[in-house]
Length: 146
Image (cartoon, rainbow, N blue to C red; front, side, top):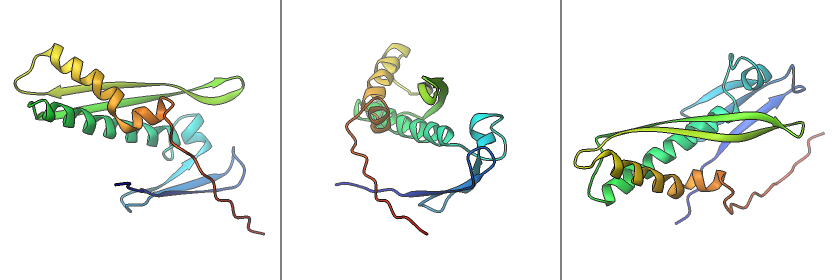
């Protein structure tokens, strides 16, 4: 069964001096984002890469927890940090890498078993698959306001 989640973003002005607001469809978060919050100090708001990091870390933690439980080893906890690295490639800002760091407390298994399941979860996480070049279709509906 397909599930659709929606978020919105609005930007006003040019890139260096403009600002925007991003809202999650759940209503749990609405906040600002700016050129500075994205490309400079990170202060004054969020940025797309931080939101991708949050999505990836949460999806991966859920995928790993699910795989551990299916193997008969439900975790007490799984905590994942995702670092999204934005760099310039061919003169364009480009996400070049995502570093996942995960810590799990899982009774009944050893470090090697945890590592093996963690590696498998990296490949099974829907957001990992999308970001690694998955086959998600991206559509665009355009409306011009005059």
